[in-house]
Length: 212
Image 1 (cartoon, rainbow, N blue to C red):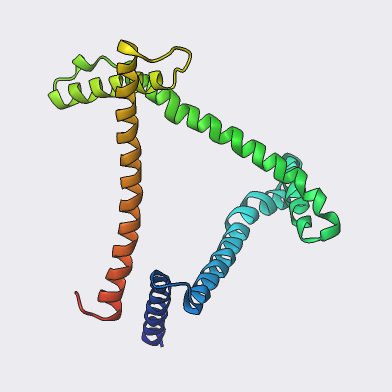
Image 2 (cartoon, rainbow, N blue to C red; image 1 turned 60 degrees about the horizontal axis):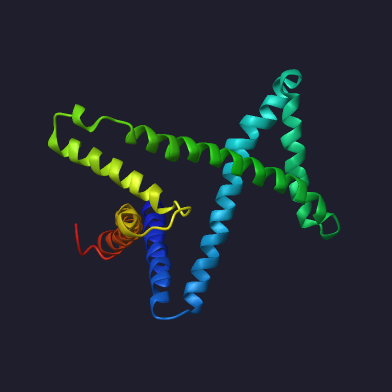
């Protein structure tokens, strides 16, 4: 029975993989079917995951076992219930308040995290003495990091007309920014190629047994 379920799972995986690949030809019913099933399964999975791994241990269990010390959890619980009122047309307006709170707090949290991870880290990396390293690669890399950071920041300095010698750092900053954008784009392409290789490996190894 276990082998039958394994074979059935492989064939279903192959069917949905080929259905998704069929979009390369054009939009078709197989692609739409696979897309809808994927969205539905993802929503169902995250609903169950949220209930049993977030709400139950972090909310219901704490309220039921020690209500006196965890009564503040009633506030997010009430906000969550208010958000569900979006499904009732006459009470949709109530859901705007928890959504506004969630958007505001999420933006503030990510702003602080980005400020610490990107801004402060970049400043700290720029203030390092490059000649303290013994490796030539580290010295050159640190010097390039300092030049790239300073020229990149100078590129966004628009209070002075950039002409003559003042245009040189700006042009250097453009080159560093283009390299950075290219590296980010290359990383994204590599991630997508990695997903494609994984799917092709599944089709050729697990489904067709062409490679071992």
